[in-house]
Length: 279
Image (cartoon, rainbow, N blue to C red; front, side, top):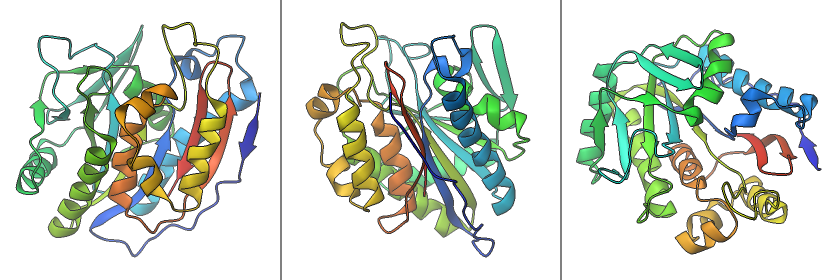
């Protein structure tokens, strides 16, 4: 098992108004929430603290909304209909995992404004007003709610599992479009994307995450070389167990190419690389 941490200290950008004020990329493995005995409590606590930091940043920056980008594990979108990107435009926002449920404020007005903004910028997202979001949303949101998250939440669901998935570059470009919308409208948002890192659920490689690839990707991001990530093909992402990093690309694109990435924590859990980065 490997551990990398920082103190995660940052100065709030209190002068920021209009645009994407902060970004996070985090993991969402169910074990982070259910905390089985095989997991290291100290490492789980670091993950939980990362989620809580998102809520604190939202309060510090006084954002108008928090955009949360995650996946649907064939929970809402099955083979009958699988949009590449889905924007939830309803209210409230509900996420559920097993018997645990969280309910947060949505903002149909802001969600519809974002929908219009994406259409104007060459994207054609689906929308839904009737979804119960899965664990990829619930796991981080549970701890954000505990920390007092009060900003409205705008969920974006990315198709990460049913081919053909959007390219990771297309996801990065969607992030750029989100930033352009926020800057143009004068709306201040934070963005958090959940997924990965390396893992192979339901396969013989379940207990063989590609830890070397995790560190390679994190190194790229810490050096500001996002291009290496967004240049990867679908086959390359699949080979290292990182199909979910399509969500990360959206947050990275939304914050631009010249931001400082901090690695709050990384842990090889033995079945998935758990990470929290802020930028």
